[in-house]
Image (cartoon, rainbow, N blue to C red; front, top):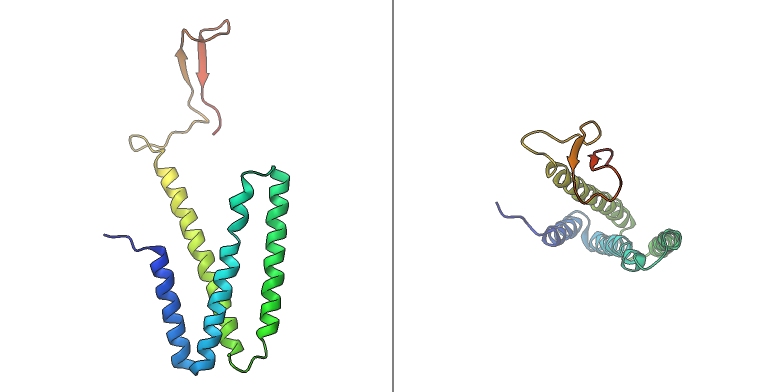
Length: 159
């Protein structure tokens, strides 16, 4: 079974939403859906930008940058929504619906990716059909390379 590209799925979803908006509400709904799709894509994709510089910053500063970025994006989104609210060339209901549904779908896909990654990490730890429990099993090994006075080392403990 071949895996479909997430970008292809996103583009197909946008085409379906825009086509549905045009069929159900005409050109004003199409314009509202197009603007809503653009706002969702810009808002959520710009949330990835701080992570590009995050690695070079101290942890406290990185959290500050993430918080300021989020606040700035929310303010810009609200300004855009207020500015577009009474425009005669677009349907505000279609715009709002696409923004809400687009944000929900984006977050659902992010959750799906996260859970899939967590499942891969969990299943890679399964050995011979049993999951190792490193908190209760201890293994004692002898090593001649140990620098302390004891030649016995206990391996185990938390993850």
